Length: 201
Image (cartoon, rainbow, N blue to C red; front, side):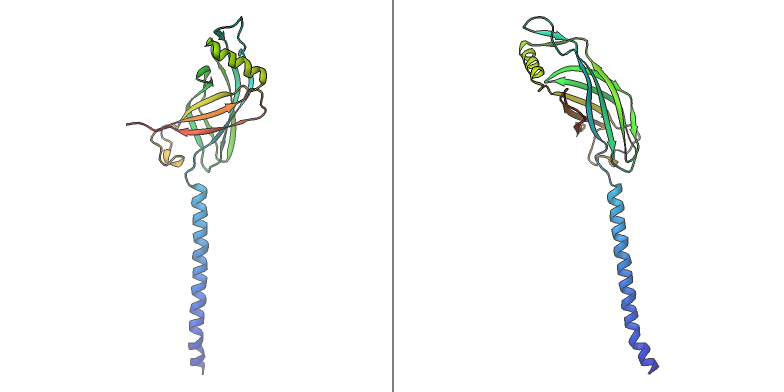
């Protein structure tokens, strides 16, 4: 009787062990997937920009082509939502109206810690910008209506030695273009889009 009882319990114990093993494997798989997802390559920092000062957009004199002397104070904000420090170098900012460059400036290289944000101030200007008669009228009209929109383009480079795969799996160039559209009268930050630039062969 003792032998029969022991023989009947053995399969039950094996089934219990198998269930525990399968449960352990399932939990391990979930943890591995979650860990991979949280540390997988991303598109890098997100950017936004805010104009804090605008000057020199009103042409002087009568009608026809005009020369303006624009100057802008702006703040570039970078938010790093990944689990690794992100750095950028050779940073330049250009403010444009249509296809006309209104100002240009260089910004120091920067790094953003993981899960952190930072802000950088920049003074962007251009000594002389020539506007055609049509562009001058359009600028005057949009300024009067409060509908003026400017494009802010920021070029950044991945530093040498920083793994490019971490932030962009299919990039062939270390250069990126961050594009924002802002209204001088708006409050707060305007979101930007990051465009990857690819090397041509």
